[in-house]
Image 1 (spheres, helix red, strand yellow):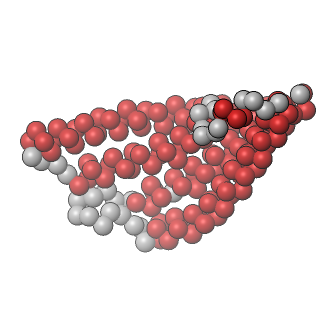
Image 2 (tube, one colour; image 1 turned 30 degrees about the vertical axis):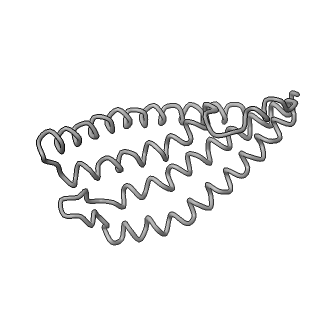
Image 3 (cartoon, one colour; image 1 turned 180 degrees about the vertical axis):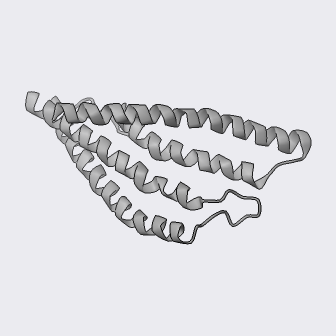
Length: 164
């Protein structure tokens, strides 16, 4: 089981590092948009839409990366005072809950993405980015990654419970 958890963690780390580069690109795009708008009274719909097209993979992939590195939201003031076995139980329950929620979102997002793909959905704005379905396809992918990272967390929490 440890090998499975290590493999998931390695994959999430690699994908998370790729998503981190989207942050750099997003900063460049936003700076370019601001410069174009306020410096030259120019701008494009495409460039503005690109900002949120870059934000989506950052959020959807970043949530798994944050979970992997313990940067998710948790009340550490209380959590740190619990005995190790209680912490492990809380982590196991949280992982199970995350898996259930992720699987439900994947299930419901499939139809949403499928409809978008079937319609070849693009931007409603003239000059906007086409292939909006590709952006929407990141939802089930991001939550599948979250479910996998939660499986890794569940394995690790179960090991900590056993060892405590």
